[in-house]
Amino acid sequence: MLLEAEKRAAARSAIVAVMPKPTLLVQISDLHVGGNEGGLDPTPRLEAVVEAVRSLPNRPDAALVSGDLTDDGAAAGYRVAREMLARLEMPLHVIPGNHDDRARLREAFDLPGAGDEPVNYSVEVGELRLVAFDSIVPGQDPGDFPSEQLRWLDEALAAEPHAPTLLALHHPPLATGIPEWDAINLLVPQRQALAEVVARHPQLRAIVGGHLHRVAASVLAGCPVLAAPSTYWQVRPDFEKEDKYQLVDTPGFAIHALREGELYSQAESVPFVSS
Image 1: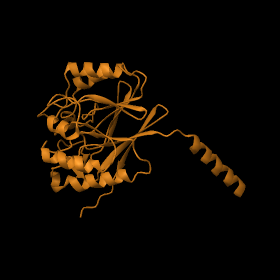
Image 2: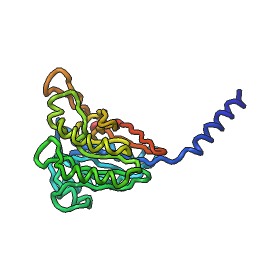
Image 3: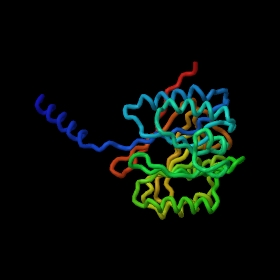
Image 4: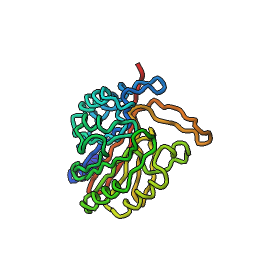
C-alpha cells in the first residue's frame, strides 16, 4: 500500500511539474471610496480585499480595477484609492464607472488619453490581452457607447486576432431578470450592438464588468460574461418585489487565470468583521 501511495504521489508531482504557469489577473471592482451606504465604510473593506489578494498562494501578474473607485468622483477619494491599491505591488489597469470622474481618474492613475474623453486602451498581461472599454455616460447610471467607440473596439480586437483576449467594461452586458437593475445597466440596444462586435472576434475568452455589486454570469454572442463582486458590499435582491434588496457586508474580488489559451474565472468572498 505504501508503494502504491508513493507512486501516486510521484505521478501527481510529475503532472504539476509539467503544468505551464498561468497568467493571473485579479479583478477588483466598485470600491466606492468616500461612500456611506447603509452606514458602511468602504475603506476597511477595501483594505481587507487588498490583504486577501496579497495573501493569495499565487501572485497575480496584474490587477484590473473595473470602475467606481470613488463614490463621488472627488480628487481626495482617488488619492486614497491609489494609495491603497499601491499596496498590491502589481500593475494596475483601471477603467471608469458611473460614479467616477474621467479626468480625475485619468490623472490619478496615469491613464491614456486626455481630460474627459473615454478611457479606452489595451495592454498585455502575460499571455493575456486585456482590452479596456469605457461604458459610462457622465452623470448617468446606465451605460452606453457611441458608434465611434464600437468602431474603436472592433478595430482594437481585429488588430490581434490570435491573442487570447479579455474585454473589460464597467457595465456588464447581461440581464439580471430584475427590471430596476436592468434599467441602470446596459439596455437591450447597447447589448445587441456590442454583441455584433463580439461575434466577429472568437479570440475573446470572456467579458467582465462590475456595477451590480453581485456576482452574475451570462453569455453574449457565445462569449462568457461575468460581473465581479464589489470590494464594498453586495446586493441580495428580491425577485418578486420591486426596489427591495438587502446589503450583504461581504467584500469580494475575482480572479481570471489563463492557461494554454483557455480562461478560467472565479469569484472570492473575503471574511470581514466590523470593528
